[in-house]
Length: 401
Image (cartoon, rainbow, N blue to C red; front, side, top):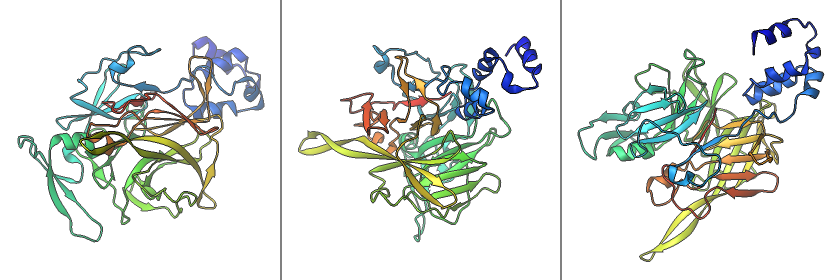
């Protein structure tokens, strides 16, 4: 806002009398859906004057291999510092990408400014006990803890670690805005545990908990960290005490297959109104060819179910709509945002944008990465972005500002 505009704002004692042009000028600088909703709700006049769907809110940008961007409308070619075969991008949030190098180095990258921030390397995740970069195809030694059984170790190559070891990154904020408060989370390992780091840390640190869990997603919510595991059990982690425990909220009981890891993926999302949402993604395996007498399968998303946490009743309540909101899930921070224009005078609302974050399915590099599209909650239809495609590598992910 200009100095002149600010001086005009300060002249008003009655905020509801703020001129419309100044009101719109202020609103243009609110990129957060939650901030915009709160701003609009300040008083009745502002609520009436400001639109439900602000024109300056833009949708997520899909980062895809360059070969697929040719011929598509409205694409921008980003030159990233590392070649795709050297860096695998496994997360995004607040305009940043998180990439894993084939040497185990983990970096955050702002693709616009090309600013880079180092995070602790792969070798420092809590389950990796030895790292010998000169031992070709046997670089990492991993310890596995099995419930009610003795732990054991095994050796894997660096390709396995880069492509399969880290399932998802989650950021608390932009590191540029709140460096002292910034925290990065990672869901790691075969058992999908949760670890964190802050800027300047030399290693990843796990949370202490007596409960067994196998996470699929995690978020920062109301000063805590919440995670959802394969059984749709909700966990709460305290970033101050570094402890975690299960929340006494039973999983949704309307879906008998919600606990099946090979048929569902679960995401936690704070809504624009401040509620905690659970999106359950259903997908199916399907035959796509026969190879020497063996059926080879791929997968695709079939639908989503969405639930809202009723805190007072301590249970998940199924919802058929997210109103004007749009949910965005995948390798990115799971988010809920205001409706936006698709550039063709169509307003996107009450839908879920998704990318393919099935790490196990992508690992073989025979199929995977292609399961990307939009699910419409009103009519339960899916618009696929890459119909007929079996394999897309590196897998696309959303770049969120």
